[in-house]
Image (cartoon, rainbow, N blue to C red; front, side, top):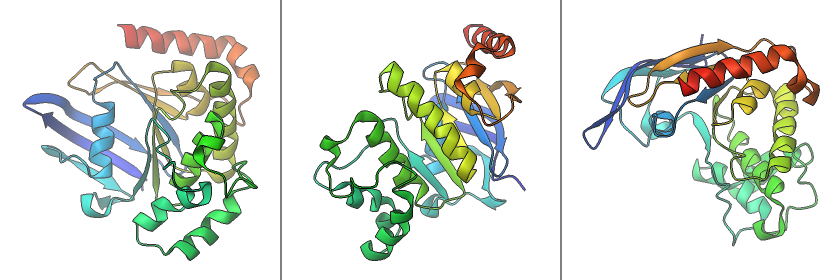
Length: 246
């Protein structure tokens, strides 16, 4: 059974066709990325998955169950970390669980074992302004995974970071995924990031979005920075860039 399946998805916003006939899926424990031009319907697709947008047509299922926007079974991490500046790190980490109905005490106990692997142990009582950019993104991801939903949606989580921190976070995320094997759907504009992290990559066409290409990324894991110098990696990167540029 697929962790996530989308079939025949159509979305129109303000009379403009944004998504037409979209088909994609993610297996349990699979890391899948979406690449596409700006405005090609990537974030709109995420909006449908979170329940924020209602599609015109299509079948969307999570673990075989039809999507119910009132009880979405995805955890969403937006482009910006969205940490609340007036809440401590710990109280930010429990926010997603609290929104889903958990009491603060049990939410803290669920989050606490994740502090060390996410590099946040000892920072529980700090405030977001006291964290580096990379730490803020790790906190945002911890808050997302702590919700224990079947699918994680990551919308350009490292897009606002400087190049060095971004590279460090990509390596860190790959290592964390190796440990926890979440089912991940990632939106990115970075072809190299998509290839480094993913098992498969979907390339969206210009609006209205459909899948223009589906690329299997079968480089062995765990992946290391040395992979970036592999000629096969470079060739696949060139293939994807050509697909995007047309």
